[in-house]
Amino acid sequence: MAELVGSEGLQHDQNTHLLIAIDGTAGAGKTTIGQMLAAKLNIPYLDTGAMYRAVTLLALQKGVPLNPPDAVRLTELARNLHFVSRDATPEEAADQRQYTVLVDGKDVSEDLRSPEVENGVSMVATIPEVRAELVERQREISRKAPGGIIMMGRDIGSVVLPEADLKIYLDASPEVRARRRSKQDAKDQEQARQNLENRDKVDSQRAVAPLVLAPGAIPIFTDHLTREEVMARVEEILDKTLKKRGFYK
Image (cartoon, rainbow, N blue to C red; front, top):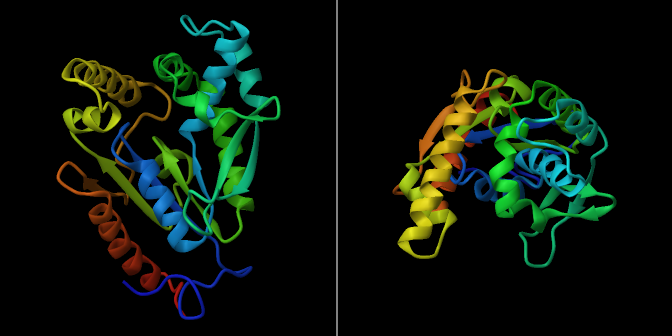
């Protein structure tokens, strides 16, 4: 693949704004690939699922009902979330920047993966008013992101950024995704598999912005691929896209 950053590659100036959408099922590798690609291209990334998880976390903390959901109060929580761009930590890839969700001024990234949030986020994500609020925030972030952005989620290529320069759709079998999510015994993996299948069903059948293969998106099935192999495939596709769209000098 041609070098994408530096003097011979992708030029980050006022005329360059690269939009990359990475959609797919839970546990298929969206976050991992998004982070790796962000470091490669030196543009920020945003895991939009963290936004819905943050609303869910706030609702749990404040006692706002999720089932049945209180749409008005949940939308208000979404409206008051704050997002900041931060540089990578020493443990993360060099030049990597991500958008972090702040709740009451605190980085809650670690809390967003709790079982309680995991079990409630699909319910929150089905609420049209919450989605409308967060989608607009996501589009605003994409417009202001320096050099463009890599955005991961369920509806990026279909709803949030339908004009994205590149659309990738990652998928894997429930069994493989469960193994990735749970490193424990077979019982834990079976529970993880059931949770993922339920999440897939909710995400694909919801009335607003369901999980779909967006027009123009390129699917990659990751069951038998390492993250390096998936990344190589994404880079190959991206290289062709950038050349076709004139991003190279």
